[in-house]
Image (tube, rainbow, N blue to C red; front, side, top):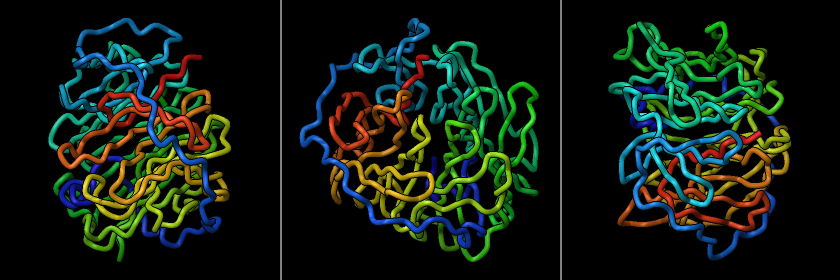
Length: 373
């Protein structure tokens, strides 16, 4: 999603604020244990097709595909590519806007995604696995709703967790008047309920983003970004990984798993529910910071923080991780440090112990591997 600089003028839909987070407590963050060092020279997968084509290819049940957003050859969009780097093509080309990060339904037959349909106007859509039959699920039709976004499927495929921002004076209102919530939307009844609600901004501004379900559907993990007032990149204090109950019983008191100085972001549960993967980086906008960016895992109770990759400052970076559906690997966006190309991100895989780093030479952001069960 966007940086705090963007939030000053327009808060991104999935970013939720809560001064209560500052007072929330959880298990103290332990020192990170060392994972195995990744291979020094990544394995490069088969060469991809030259430019993603917008021509729809058959996406059959049981076939593994990687969904991702953004390709520099064609611009922002929603794309698929096979795990070997072939048959890259754009899907959902008929939607009236720019798709954001995708999320596969548990059966792999649908994709949920955020859609920017105007100047910082976001909606939530779903489409079939091949991009056909796009359908608007949720939108802000009128004030006080300003934005919705960041959808993630529930394990049973019946609900989406997402973020909503409202403001009594509409999109042009002062960010201090924002009401930000994490909500669960029932696809059958088309109703939503709040599971986390933030109080108004105080001495600090706190963003909540990137909510993801636990495999048993009882909890939601997300990122807490904290800023001094006013919220800008320069005023960013750090970010943490937090967990809240999906039934709304911890609506204003999430459990904090990591210290804000670690800069944890973009968490995802392992399929067995035993670990949460995330990436960590220092304060600053993503493309601007020089801090080391690496993958970590942690238990949901805040114990056994483990570093997976070991890139250093001004080095390559590991970002936007999610588990593969079978839990055997982690798929992520591999950021090659290139002064001439600040967006040189590729699809990559790595084992949870830090071994067997494999990079597809395919520009991509937010890659997710399709469930094939």
